[in-house]
Amino acid sequence: MKLMMFADGGKTRLGVVQGEEVAAVAGGGVPEDIAGVISGGEAALAAVEAAAAGGERFKVADVTPALPLAHPGKFICVGLNYALHAKEGGHDIPTYPSFFPRYATSLVPAGANVIRPKSSVTLDYECELAFIIGKGGRHISEADALGHVFGYTLFNDVSVREYQRKTSQWTPGKNFDGTGPFGPVVVTPDELPAGASGLRITTRVNGETMQDSNTEDMIFTEPNIIATLSEFMTLEPGDVVATGTPSGVAHARKPPAWMKAGDVVEVEIEKIGVLRNPVVDEA
Image (cartoon, rainbow, N blue to C red):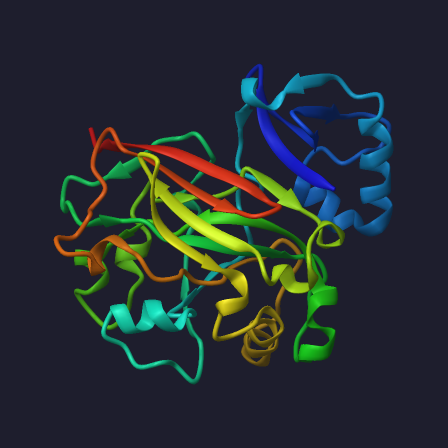
């Protein structure tokens, strides 16, 4: 199933994407949002699927996407998870994942503006596969890890490189307001290969392909990431994990291809969809 949240009359609604249409679901005990579907488990998914059959329909192209999860409990990013990206940044191939947080104030939905801040022009794109935890836990084995995933979505880990490099901690450069495009859809695992592996992942800026790779090229697989995280923290339903970006980022190009106002950046992952956002300067 392919779920999305969208804006309608000043509120957000839950919908099921079916081809070029989205069927709104509501009432009769059906969850009001994706967070509710996650907490409701298989029964909630079945209820949503049934409600979509008679739901009000809209053209996907005509709706305004909302964030899949407005306030994730945790939003964890994995750094340097593609070998060529590590090399282009001058890093050794890691033997243990680099983790850093994203905060909700940095997140924006598909179609919303990415903000180039007043303080720096070093605005970079990063296409990423993200997954959402459906079943929480601690000390999760790699063998059991995929059973803890609710679904998959797209993320653009837009980075202000100048601030990312001010210290060894990347948090400032990864958390400027308006720099975390997220969504627009969440695809359940039954629609994809195991672990969403083997999918083409790309970034385009103004239609030009800047990154082009495959999710099977990750250094740390999704089961490994889940197992590693759960060694030191409790993963909870609704937590989001972004799995890192491949090579081709702006800072590695000569000259650097920093994004600027007027650009349109698109992240696409095969079988999931497209995350498209315009870039504007901070007011």
